[in-house]
Amino acid sequence: MGIVVVAVAGVFGAAWAWLATGVLVASGVGWLGWVVLREGKPDSVTSMGSSIRPIALGLIRRREQILVFEGRDDVKGETYYRPLGGGVEFGERSDDALVREFREELDASIVVKERLGVLENVYAYRGNPGHEIAFVYEAEFVDAGLYARDEMKILDDPATARWVDLQDFRNGSKILYPAGLTELLLSE
Image (cartoon, rainbow, N blue to C red):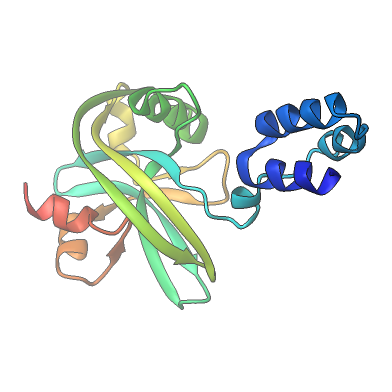
């Protein structure tokens, strides 16, 4: 009967497995299910890497340029650019996540403006699949002096943020991620 508990835990999660354990114990089968639950098995779906990650990205402009970081995917052999931002934590609003991310990445305060759109990005990075829902916002630095800097070191990553001409993304000479962001900018 312990197999039943393992199956319940793997398919429905630990809460249902506890219920199954209670039924098994009440029916006199024993505590085998309890031992299985104590091991803290990962959720079967998450362990296969198929979770969707919500992110918030800030589009900060300097004339006809946007602030991005440069990344490299050696598996694809491509250099790409992406606005700054990051993951939305459970219970956190996407605009609040963006403010937090800019504080963590650049130690900079921003004002979040209009939400430009929401993009779904299904991709592969370094050969690994990924899936994001990206909330894209216009944003501005509180400290106007940051617009004068050509580059800014990202504090929690070895990358550097820099200003890149929008025309480079529009004409295809540089790649802007997430997918669909260039088209969103063209529709403005």
